[in-house]
Amino acid sequence: SQQGEEDPQALSIQEGENATMNCSYKTSINNLQWYRQNSGRGLVHLILIRSNEREKHSGRLRVTLDTSKKSSSLLITASRAADTASYFCATPPPTGANSKLTFGKGITLSVRP
Amino acid sequence: DGGITQSPKYLFRKEGQNVTLSCEQNLNHDAMYWYRQDPGQGLRLIYYSQIVNDFQKGDIAEGYSVSREKKESFPLTVTSAQKNPTAFYLCASRNPGPSRINEKLFFGSGTQLSVL
Image 1 (cartoon, one colour):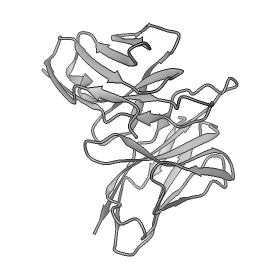
Image 2 (image 1 turned 180 degrees about the vertical axis):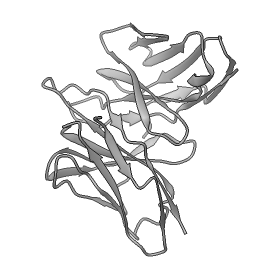
Image 3 (image 1 turned 45 degrees about the horizontal axis):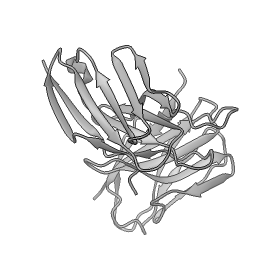
Image 4 (image 1 turned 90 degrees about the vertical axis):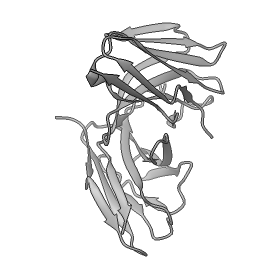
């Protein structure tokens, strides 16, 4: 079953604008991760936020986590055409220290030059 | 350069044929994974291995098989029992770390498998 669900499914913005993507999940987590995938390529890890963190920054990326609402958001500021890609949130299972990350269906971001 | 290498980039399977996708990593990671990605879909876990000579089924293991004889290698065989094999296959690895808390995955560049 899908643990993480992103929205919107697709997002089209103008270069320079900010892009906000959301992820909701169903069970308790100890961390949530965001990945990026360029067309026809593998995924690249962007950022990890732990359950005891509320906000985290990495360059132009800002991630928030609200465990009471079981949701996370990824903000890309001052977007560039090169940010065009699919973005996925991923969560580990709620119990145990095992290895299985579950991915959402992803958000397709298009940044128009 | 350290990383994960998947080969081939494109693979074609004939009816009734088994095909093997290669995944090699030089990151010295213990854990390795195979995911399947269908167009517009998320990743679904096929098999994973947390240590050499051990592996577990993921959510969609039917029609697939794996082996983990060496730490750096985790090949995936798509058997003839897999009736809908056309998809993008992604291999990943992870270093669990001393705290055993889940950390990030490192992915290969994928193999596109198509049926002739």
